[in-house]
Length: 439
Image 1 (cartoon, rainbow, N blue to C red):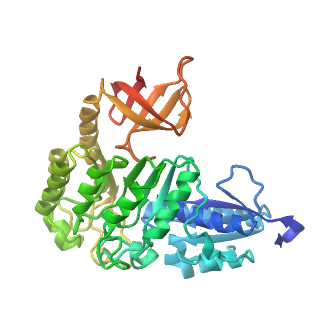
Image 2 (image 1 turned 90 degrees about the vertical axis):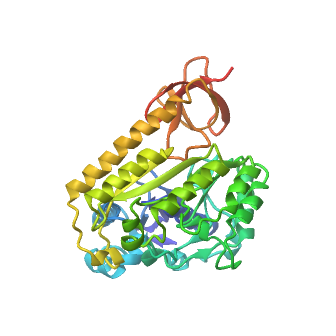
Image 3 (image 1 turned 30 degrees about the vertical axis):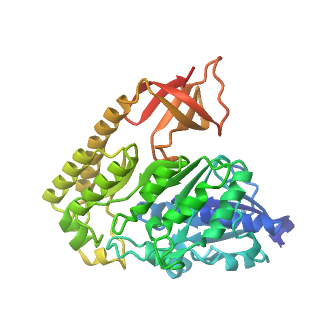
């Protein structure tokens, strides 16, 4: 395929948003490479003449970043620096008509499930035989595995079903084959992602089948860590807890976004299908069954109708539950969601103050929990080297969002990236640990 100026096709794919989007980008790259098309991911040089932007439309800030990125490349096209500009992903799925009208310099917009249509722009075929294979853009030793697409949950604030559609599980045999392919490439950690892991299998196997999937993945030789992200609390499949205990290569780590603590907010306003009491009972069961587990959660502050009393309840909940990892979002008023029918009545500055207060509470909790690790020896997977430090993670930490372990790279210390190393913790900060290689 040639573009104007007879330049050979060279594609640069730019990914915005979450790890689920990154997997989509990796699938695009896999298909392009299989069709002998020169494609890179977020290349730093300016040699590409075709740009694909994989957008995020999750919350207002993410939408703004996506639009700014599209506009920057549209300007580059106007200046003749690139030949073609394609836009795909969540923002494109949700606002395609508006984007076509407002940014006509984009050659084509595609939705979240339009990969075959995108490939046609390159006169390329979607190769079905590649299912289970994937080019990865992360460091080779870890990879994200999307086990399902879409979501059937009715959360009032969430626009994901509008952009990703209903829940569709990936067949187990495809995921197992993908894990085997990753292991052959040297991948040691797979991170299971979906909008809701706990729904896995309901559409295909007519039951929640995450436990069986974990059992089969745990048997794949060469996979040392399996990590679970995005588990919905309502209807949580308790059988996975014994599966975690049974297999040493399933990390004692669970990312379970709870969003709030007030029963009024959870049930009546946010449509989460759970109460505070049931949430606390679930957390207690998880911690009793898997005693060393690290629980990560995310919360939303400033949702419409959230009162000071609701927020105080959230603060008290965070203080008493002492989550190992926690993040917080300020509410984003998303059109066509049920929450959009409410007035966005919490001022932006109050939202930010509440978010800061939650993170201040969590900072103290994280510091106290980290101080308890000083003197202990932990198994660490090293991701990268920055400046004078090798930087890695324990089984209780996911890439980019959680705590890290730093080891000074002095003349007597060498660590190969992608390897596991035992590290004795010598110092702890609020969100990071410092250590030395265990003797």
